[in-house]
Amino acid sequence: KSDLILAVNDVLANDQTHHRYIIKDLLGQGTFGQVAKCWSEDRDCFVAVKVIKNQPAYHQQAIVEVSILDMLNSKFDPEDNHQIVRMIEHFYYQEHLCIVFEMLGVNLFELLKANNFKGFSLNLIRTFTKQILKALALLRDAGIIHCDVKPENILLTTSPGSAEIKLIDFGSACREDRTVYSYIQSRFYRSPEVVLGHAYTTAIDMWSLGCVAAELFLGLPLFPAQSQYDLLQRLMKVLGGKPPDFILRYAKNTSKYFKIGRAPNEESVLMGERQHSSYQFLMPDDIRLRENEAPVIGRHYFPEDWDLEKLITSYHMKRGMSEEEIKRESSRRLVFVDFLKGLVDMDPLKRWTPNQAEQHPFLTEAPFTGPFQPPQDVPRLPIRQVMNMDHNPVTGHWF
Ligand code: ATP
Ligand code: MG
Ligand code: MG
Image 1 (cartoon, protein in one colour):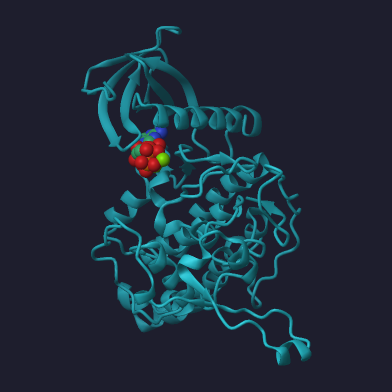
Image 2 (tube, rainbow, N blue to C red):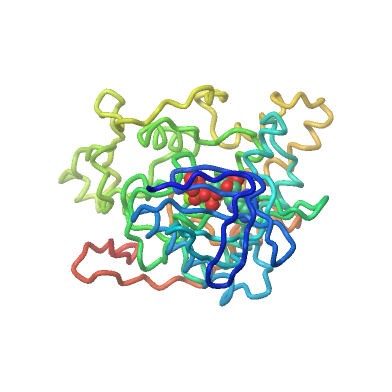
């Protein structure tokens, strides 16, 4: 039997430590298994226990989750000040891996929903974003990619009245030097290099963070795409331009979405032009949309032709602000747009790192004097993976 039927008052017992967890409520259910709110008799507190399905694929991924969280908690964040969920212990109960976490509160999707999807104030978004950056800075140092940054995986802590949040769900996380899966990240938050099937780095989490920050403002996803093609189309419209050539050239799925245009002719070569961008985005009719990608109903709230700046600065219409409020807010919104642009940069090499983003005036509240130019961050050495595999000489990444 691959799944336990969990019920209130059942006891999950760790036979080794003899710790007992009494189920008080069921918090979530997913493909992975179930999350239960439990009373820990031994610690006199509530905890969240993720009970993993007894199936090899889920079990294997959960083992990775445990080992990554264990390393992050104990080695990189022993003082618990980087906004990453604490894992208390793990054990087997009737052949099901059970992971015990500190008990947290509602997730940011639920919080947006409770607010009727109207979005949060820039002050609250600043508070949340700073904390997620703290987590992502630590992940970068540790060489870990979360791979599933989204509102559902960011939870408020239970401390009353505070806006403290923590990053959860390392069930898709991987080491930067072991990026084995190419189908990762939830679609709305998926970076262009992942869509195109290019090698990827911790920069994909920064992309997701940009999408999350925009959503916290808009109340609705920035790129509510129904398919990967739709996603590319939307992000090129909102951001302008195409993914960088060096990604298009080396990514394995480029030909699914782009055709290679006319090669540079003799004249352009004589004129000393380097190979110019010759990738053309395919028209919808040219492409077989991804099978089984369910349409997203009711997500098309924004005019199709709006770019990022217009989406953010024009949002007062949705919020019913007065003219006066709009004026006061508009300069603050421009700072926010500049911040978002550094995160949702289609070029993963230019996309800001957590340390760079932390210095942006939107977060530091320093005067904004024009587009932010972050100071250089410590460059990451390209990671040598399997030697006989493809190599992108521009990024230095092996696939
Ligand atoms: P997904 O299917 O989205 O990948 P998952 O299967 O990996 O999710 P989690 O995201 O870890 O599982 O947990 C599922 C849900 O359970 C979360 O979105 C959250 O609402 C709830 N949850 C998880 N951990 C906790 C916790 N420590 N405290 C409170 N609730 C939690
Ligand atoms: Mg999750
Ligand atoms: Mg998950």
